[in-house]
Image 1 (tube, protein in one colour):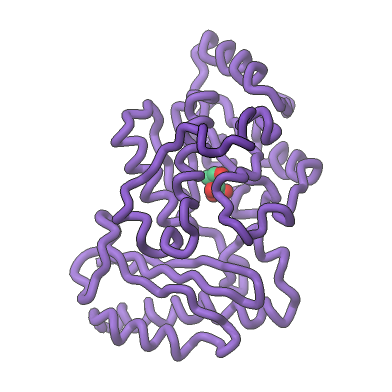
Image 2 (cartoon, protein in one colour):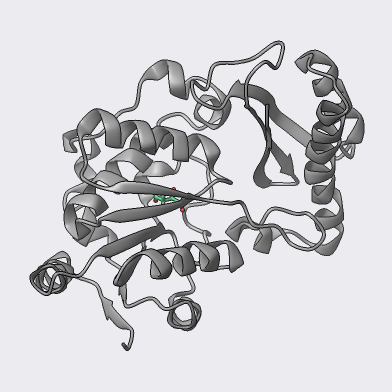
Length: 286
Ligand code: PAF
């Protein structure tokens, strides 16, 4: 099947209606474009589990905080079409901001989906105020527009994945969330659209983020369960030019902070190299 690109909600709804009439299942991969191999693995997963793969390409303004990179976020739709086609995508839904939020100038008028405060007052939510309100709102809209049977999300954005799974349970969205493994460069650097902003020397510095997480994982495997000691190991392995935002240990199922690791735990980091904010994590399996 060839790739169809649609910009209007009404058009994607028409396609979805037809697919459903034909008894086809749909998998959605929500993205902000600038597709890389991490997205490719999500699209391939979607293609392997459903009859139809739809991706959204939309740089969602309401999940960026003031001063963040909304304006300069890479928009590469022509290149994205090629990547998507190779990954077996059937439809790209690439709406304009006006199509998704016709009344955005009156932001306070927008109905939002807001995750519980205690789950956003940690990790990325703590420094990116309102970020997950924007994510959950746009993902809810996409679920309502595309009505997918499956939706694939990457484990790099581990807090996002956790909150979306909870939102789907709490609000009874009839969709199965499919978590997909984090994808890394051969060097260990977690793939991200924001890696494009890094110079070669910054990339070398950024590599110490995954190096530090791997060192923590190795120490954990060697029997250290005290997260204070693991934290210190992480710090020791970070380049001094990496500005640490957080290095947290949270229980995989509750996202509550952990002092002593007794159950499977996510060790997650956010850090800045220059102006570039990067996130990464490893799972400490018990
Ligand atoms: O992970 C992302 O790229 C975005 O947060 C998402 C899920 C596409 C919502 O805009």
